[in-house]
Amino acid sequence: MVAAAQKPGGLKKVLGPFDLVLMGIGAIIGTGIFVLTGTGAVTAGPALTLSFIVAALACGFAALCYAEFASSVPVAGSIYTYSYFTLGEIVAWMIGWDLLLEYGLATSTVAVGWSGYFQSLLKGIGVVLPEALRAAPGAQPGVNTLFNLPAFLIMIFLTWILSMGVRESARLNNIMVIIKTGVVILFIVVGVNYVKPENWQPFMPFGFGSVMSAAALVFFAFIGFDAVTSAAEEVKNPAKDLPIGIIGSLAVCTILYVIVAAIMTGIVPFPNFKGVDHPVSLALQYAGQDWVAGFVDLAAILGMSTVMLVMAYGQTRILFAMSRDGLLPAKLSEVHPKYGTPYFATWMVGIVFGLIAAVVPLDVLAELVNIGTLAAFSLVSVAVIILRKKRPDLHRAFRCPGVPVIPALAVIFCLALMSFLSWHTWVAFVIWLAIGLVVYFMYARQRSLLNKA
Image 1 (cartoon, rainbow, N blue to C red):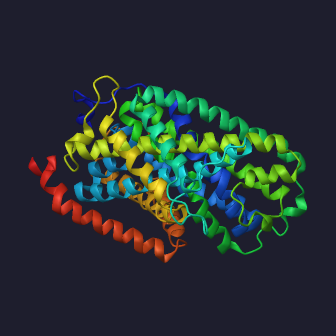
Image 2: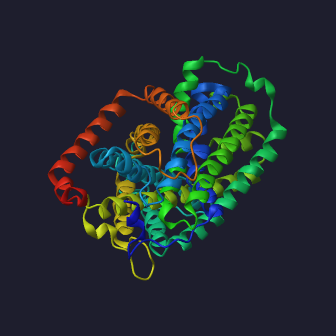
Image 3: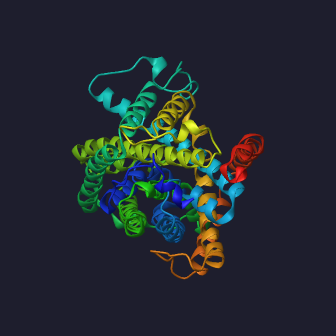
C-alpha cells in the first residue's frame, strides 16, 4: 500500500505546510460561517458558541488521530487508505464509499449555496437570469425552475482548475483563503463595537439539548480539514507537514467561528436569524455597516469556492486510491502525463456533481453529509487504537497523545452528535451503505489487486 505512492505515474510532491493549512481553512470556512451560523443561533441562542466548541472538540480529537495516520501512511486516499492498511479491504471499501457520498454531496450542496449568493450579487448590478436557469426543479415554490446554471458552471470552472495541476489549484485556493479570512477578521474588528451584552441573555434559552442539536448542525461547518489528508502523496514532507496542516487549520477556524458567533448574537437578538441565509451580513446591516456587508457577501462567494475546490480535490484522490487498488475502474487512477493529476477522475467528479447541484434541491442534498463524516471520524479513531496494537513497531512521525483515551473521546463525541440527527438521515445512510455492499461483492471484490494476489 505505502509502496504504491512510489510507483511510476504517481502524483507530484509539490505542497508545503503553508499550502496545507490554507487548504484546510479553504475547506472549512464557507457555508458553515456564512450560512449555518444563523440556523444554529435560532436553535441554541447565544449558546451557539458552546455548540461550535462541542463540534470542534469532536473534530479535534479526530484530527489528532488523522494526524498520526497521515504522517505514518503518506498515501493518497485519506481515511480510505488508513482503513485499508489497518482494518482490511471490505471496511476500507465501505468507508471509501461513504466518503464518496460525503465529499460529493458536500461539493454539490455548497455549489447551490454559492449560486444563491452569486445571483444576489448579479441582481445588485441589474443582471437577472432567466427563471428556468435559477435553481433546481421544485427548489422555489411557485417558480418554474429547471436547472441551476450558476451551480453547474462554477463546478465546471473549478474542475478545470483542478485538472491543470495541484500546484495551480493550491495557488488559487491560497489567494481566495487569504481574502476571505481577511474579511472575516474585518467583520470581527467592526462588529465588536456594536455588541450589546443584553442580547446574550438568556445565554442558553432552550437548555443543553439545544446546544447539542445545534452542534450536530454546525458540525457541517468543520467538514473539510480531513480533506487535507487526501493530499498526503503530494506533500513534500508529509511526516512533518500533514499534522501542521490538519491541526493548524482546525485551530484557526475554531477560534474564528466562536468569535464570529459571539459577535453575531451580541449584535442581533437570536430570534431574528430565523429564515435568514446571510446571518453575517444581517448583523452588519443591524450595525448600520452596509459597506462591510458587501465585502462579506464577496467573501462568502470566495469562501464557498474554496470549499468546493478542496472537497472536489479530496474526492478525486479517494477515487484515485480506490482505483489503484483495483476496486474501481483503472481509468480513474490514470495520471495525466503533463499536469500530473488524475485527469479523468477529476472531470468525472466535476460533471457528475455539477449536474446533481443543478437539478437537486439544497435541502435534499444536505441530508447525508454530516452523518457520513461523523462515521468516518469514528472509524479512523478506532483504527488508531487497532494499529497501535497490531503494529507497535511502525514509525510514527506524529503520535496521537493519550491513546486510547483521545480516540475513544473522538468516537463518543461523534456518536453523540450522530444521535441528534434525524431518523430520515439514518435510513438514507443505511441504504447508501447497503448499495455499497452490493457493488463491492458484485464488482470490486473480484477485481481487487489484494484478492488477486
